[in-house]
Length: 193
Image (cartoon, rainbow, N blue to C red; front, side, top):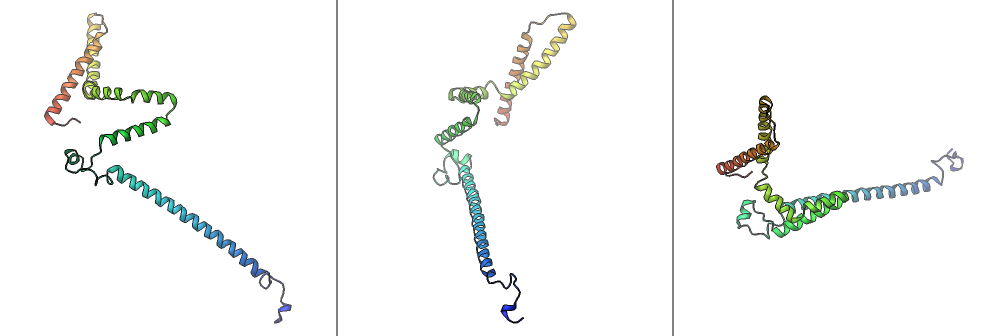
């Protein structure tokens, strides 16, 4: 059996086997290289996303803007060194509103355009900071409930009829107490929130 001609035919001693296996290994090597390059590309994409998010966060916090803005202004001292100009705030606000409105259905988009009209927004802010205070409205509602309940019980007991103005009057009284409470709280503590 030492003669090569007498060796039985098997894949190990077949002359074609080394070529096939070399081609096979070459294809496998190409596939592995392609998979590795795909994985490295995915890792690079993930790394780029993370870097972009980190830079966006630092810009949002004012990290990139600190060098250009004055640090000696009173506003800069109040806000920890970052001052965002009004034009930038307005531009960012308008851009964000436009993005959100594009995602809304048509009816909600129309409503959003109405309530985000600058005139309506300013009016709402003024009313919210003066007469439509949350504490005043809450106090008005609670007072109206209890006063109307008491008036109703008394009217039923003594046989009087109610006119309907009792609820409005009770709300106004409670609302005035709520405004007074807010005013006194601000005067005593010095904090608006």
